Length: 316
Ligand SMILES: C[S@@+](CC[C@H](N)C(=O)[O-])C[C@H]1O[C@@H](n2cnc3c(N)ncnc32)[C@H](O)[C@@H]1O
Image (cartoon, rainbow, N blue to C red; front, side):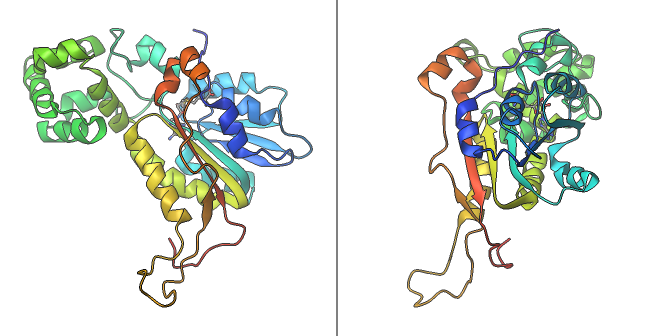
């Protein structure tokens, strides 16, 4: 199956990263190499693009698509950026891009078990190894299921759906995306079922849990920031409010200066900003992009630049 994925906010991301021709860049979510090719095509002299992905299908495709460019593609989780750079003996980079979530290729490949639009064995593993959606749905207890549906899906019928999952699997395991979709429909009120697809939030929540997306995002943001040279840039594209909140809060912390109460005559906290925001507000898709690519509807791009001088050590 052809790897098809339209990169979102491409021009805006390039503007945000302000690629230096001799710079070293990491695309931590290389996918189909849409963003990576654009970065790599701007590199000259000793410039290098390092593409990472936890999915071997993406690694294979990106390796092919980046042939002839100054690029290396590595099978790795972006939360392991430090180790990757250490292995390559690269002390720091000029920019890191994280384009979060799943690719269209992963969603559209039915047998990867991500989608409620096709019936396939429950899977949802980006890395194609370890804990799967089948394991989560068939072994986690009702409370743990309710918790992820609520926290990672903001599903208001989390309790009903978790109960229905546990009841259903008492007879036989829930094997497929189709079976999960059907039991979600049974668990929610008819009105909700008619309004929107009632499966979206549960599928999102299970996918986040299976891939520990928030855990890797939190670790990966800090690791990426630490690997930036002074003046280096970090660009992150998010697709839902939960992951955007993690990025927004972490960026705000790095960009914050003095936190002394306003009535203090002088600063005693000693905190100085470790970064500055490149765009004051998150960048969203233009009307042309919204028309051309439905995935761009929820996309938000945030970019920061690491300060030239490191801030106070107390600022963590
Ligand atoms: C939205 S797609 C990226 C698309 C890419 N920017 C392009 O233009 O083709 C997200 C990719 O990131 C990968 N991914 C998600 N989380 C990851 C992680 N923690 N570490 C490495 N890769 C990850 C997924 O496997 C997927 O291929």
